[in-house]
Amino acid sequence: MTESIQQFFNARPESVGQAREFAAQALDGWGLRARAEDIRLCVSELATNAVVHGTAPGHDGFLVRLDSDDDVVRLEVHDSHRKQPAVREPTTTDVSGRGLQLVAALSDGWGVEDRASAGKIVWSCFKATEGATG
Image 1 (tube, rainbow, N blue to C red):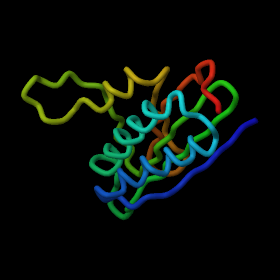
Image 2: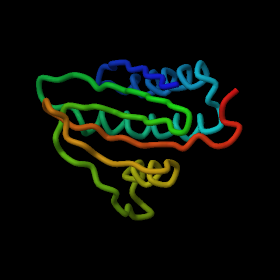
Image 3: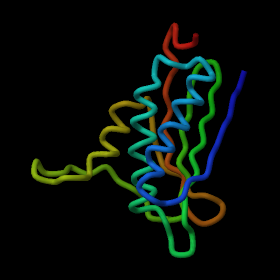
Image 4: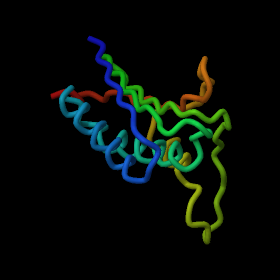
């Protein structure tokens, strides 16, 4: 059975925690607990990127969407900026720049797609492991 849920958030720092809680509640409601912490962390990183880098002038927010079927949970963060994110190699003294490295390490795949309207979708997928439901 396929489940989908989405919510729009304003582009402000406190929205990152709200997006993380939104995802946690959805996953718990679907009985998907095995990868919940990985997904929550990826929501946090992608939502932070949307707040910091993804808001084009005249647009003030981002959308978080979760889709689940029997095998995979797909996380999407839609924002209004076309600039493509890239994994970078921060130095040991950099205080930021590790978010996409975390997403790449924790997810089973991720990428970026242009939206038909302005902006992009940054997505990551998580395979539901045995015993992940219930």
